[in-house]
Image (cartoon, rainbow, N blue to C red; front, side, top):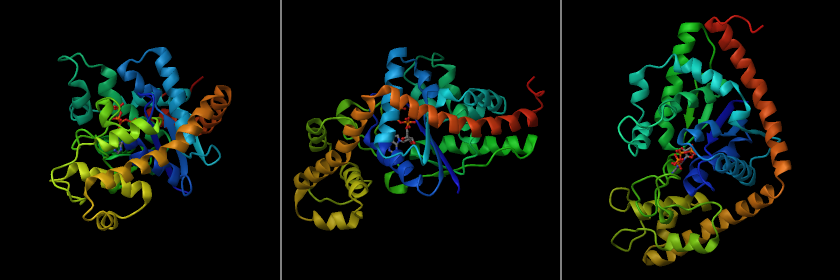
Length: 332
Ligand code: AQP
């Protein structure tokens, strides 16, 4: 079976609809056909310096949501990144293979660092994509299911794998992105050209998986739509309606042309109501299961320990090859 790997940051109290449709739902589907590794990337989350209590809480909430969304601990290795020490170790090795200019071209760093003063963004934020390359290469992943915002980082992972293999002999599988065009960028409800994001969307622009039905419905009904009344997909002129069409299409597995035909002549109101109900119906069971899983922390931690043990076995093997190939003496 080909291997698939991906990760999600514990940087909020809930995942949002973009994380769910763009990433987590694919993860659940891929565990049926792939050897699957999925992690909560807490080493990435400390690039923005959360408090220890917040990080602990969010890491467990993130893990619980992954299981609640359908990841099966029998079929997927679900773990917390910091439980596998090799991530940090390989990141250092790869940092030493990366050019400053190459790292400096990453647009996510430019976006995220722009809110800090000149030169004040953390070095961790700068090296974030290199740690991400280590995450992927450690597991010899063939495919990495992500949203469109991760394309450039995946390209760096591929470059680093190829460079290392050329310099030190075949060590890493060169990974490919797995991106579903239809859901690669779910956008902010209030700013439908920007991606829905944990850190930059306003509360009105984001639909959280753990949110109650009332607020979810309200936000969809108040989503920015475009002038006109036709429910048709048109990225240029109707980004708001197009985003809602993509959401309804993905959740209900209905092609967009079929939705356009169904809502022809009905205006935006009925359509938005249906989108709201679809979101509420998709999220409610995940919320309920997440709450249940969080009610037994000891069991959740046991599930994560089992995932970490499976991950560690693979990571240790890759790291042993890296150490040997790069010329480190055998560990005494
Ligand atoms: N709006 C989106 N549409 C489709 N996919 C998305 N993803 C994120 N936003 C969208 C995908 O979700 C996965 C996990 O994301 P992450 O936790 O690594 O963080 P991110 O990509 O940086 O997402 P956020 O919400 O913007 O988080 P913050 O604000 O913490 O940086 C990834 O596969 C991502 O592509």
